[in-house]
Length: 168
Image 1 (cartoon, rainbow, N blue to C red):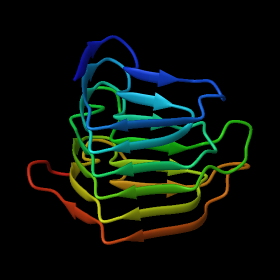
Image 2 (cartoon, one colour):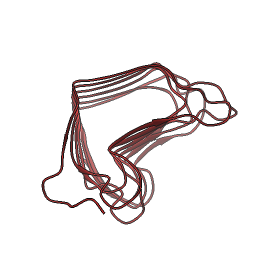
Image 3 (cartoon, rainbow, N blue to C red):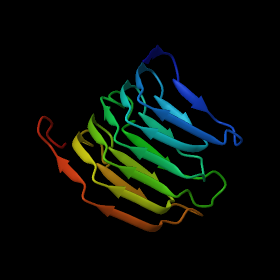
């Protein structure tokens, strides 16, 4: 249980981290992101919540990333952050491969998952509840930008619900 920290709770911004696995952790209460790691990353069976920014912000990596069976909630409440922000490889290029499977993401007002410039991405069997209700973002948003194409994306079996929040 890691909590009550000012800034990113789990952070690695370099290019030589190799493999990082975060499993069976509870990470919460920060004015930054719960996890921001530039490496081959696996986050599995974790409970991530109460981050001012995003639960997971791994936006400058071209390594494989896996996010499996996590519970994410109450992130980005005041800042426009959200559940997961992924992709956006620095200097162009394409991020990936990416697997996001079996996650529950709820009460993230800006977005559930936002991703730009991904290749070989699979977003499968996730549940989104009351996400993207205060901004023009979306529960699940994939896009491109200059030098960052979007290729080979599979989105399947995801569920989207709005129970407690009205979309503005």
